[in-house]
Every structure is written in C-alpha cells, then in structure tokens.
Image (cartoon, rainbow, N blue to C red; front, side, top):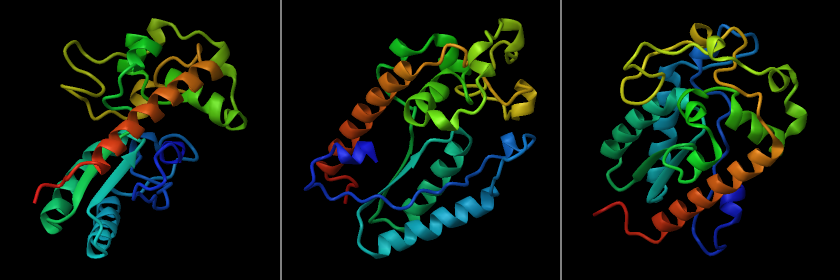
Length: 212
C-alpha cells in the first residue's frame, strides 16, 4: 500500500485484495499454519488472471512476499501469458533484486535468514510491534551450531536449492538469527523496499510492455 501511495496519482494502477493464505506446506509441522495446495493456488491465480485479461487490463503483477510459492507463481504466469497473449504477467518476489539490502543485512542472513529472522522480525517490530508475541528470540543469541546448514555446494534457495521443510532446519520455526532485530532496521528495510518497487512500477507504467 505504501508503495502505491508513493506513485503519481494519475498513474493507472489498482490493487486487488491480498491473498492471505498461500502455499506454505513447509511450515505445517507448526501449530496455526494454514496452507492451500499447489493445485488450488494455480487454479485461483489462473482464474483471476484470465478475468483480468478479459476486462482489458494490459498488465498483472503478482506481488508476492512468501518465498515458498515463487516457483508456482512463475509457472502459472507463463501459462497465463500463453492463454492471454495481450496480458503481461509479472511474478514478483518482495525481496528479489532489491539494491541496498546487502548494506543492511549480514551475508549469512541474506543467504540463510529465510523465516522470522533478522529482516522479517525487524520489519514486524517497525510496522506491527504488537504482533511480535515472543521476545525470547530477540534476547537469545543464536550460535552457529544452532543454525543448520546445507551440504557443501547446496543451498536452501538459489542455484542448487533443497526442497526443505521448516522442521528440517529449526525446532522453533525461526530460520536464521532474529536476535539483532530492531525497529530501526525495519524502518530502513521498509524504505529500501518501497523505493525499489516504486521505481519498478513507474518504469513498467511508462513502458509499452508487453510487446505487441
């Protein structure tokens, strides 16, 4: 919302209702996790995308903040592009390709801080402090021995990824080290994210994409 609020009012961009429950089977060993199946997500996104195209919209951006469904959204976006040739479909991930993150986060957290770690916890402390219920992970310094690493040459995400489940890596559900999280870091991360995506949306709206 803050990203869209920073765009010029005359720019033709609208936000649809967000999808609160996504594809999150990796977290289902932890109570309170709700997840829909891959088939349901693909069908939902495809149906909505086709209706958007039939209304005459030229572009559809999936603005995704959950790393567990990046691949699904990329696949269904390609499918939609074939089904609706006049519609540009852009499956974006909140944290991908954002310049300046490496200046705010340690390399280890960029690589391994995948869930409720330094970046996400800092953002929550800044944006919704009352939703950060358990302070024990802020007060406890996580040692290298407590952070499970992948075999040499493999990664949790990236070039040689593993299809991991959260319980493979963590007994608490936290993947990474949240102990240094602060509202100040959250505010800096929010500013970097908003500026990056605002710039990309303006670039898209000023372009002729998709090509005819």
